[in-house]
Length: 256
Image 1 (cartoon, rainbow, N blue to C red):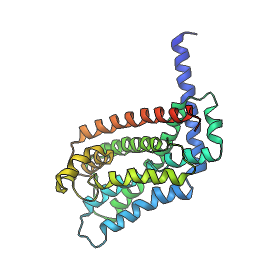
Image 2: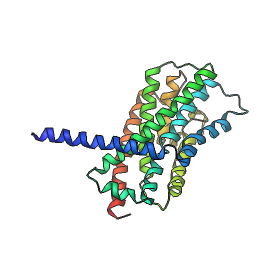
Image 3: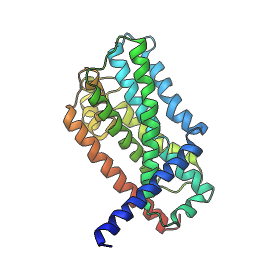
Image 4: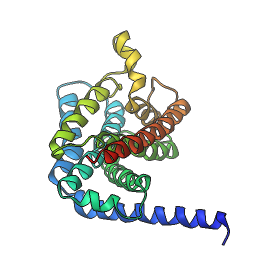
């Protein structure tokens, strides 16, 4: 057997392991109350607080709701899986298996991606049924949802890297990061109408690029161009995942 074939088999094995971790996470964690609260109820409450009593057009609300649902759902799984498994002492058993750390983290990322992408269909359907909103570019919407879900899931796995005594501590850290990035992303107010200093901060939020792509797919104007936004989502996903591998490995080497 050639070296090349051995590498292909090794990659295939690690991919299968990632999918097994996806199956495990889906069965154990998707219906956990914290996942449902932070991943599903949060965007609903934010939507109601934003929409009620304000003359906001549905064409603006629906894309923002889709992006916000993705933001919370896709990034909700990662910060909860690792702390729970550390508490249950199953994390040590998992990393002692022949599965590489990147494959384990990839399984968590895929878990968040599937959870977020599937639940994002709900606001899309509700927007199409209950309002006169239309999708102008379906392939762009699908690409935006997929890339955004992978990006936000990678960020969630990164936020789960610090050792914590319980999921609540990680969720506190997660919300300290996610909420400020949410408010500077243009979901609630167009970025070009924000103060100048916020406009300088907005490019730091991956949700800004996701919102731009999804708004463009619905035919709404966006602050950032589509193709640079897609490129930034891909770049930030790579950065988040590489940082996740680095920090998870660092804490593991310290025995924490």
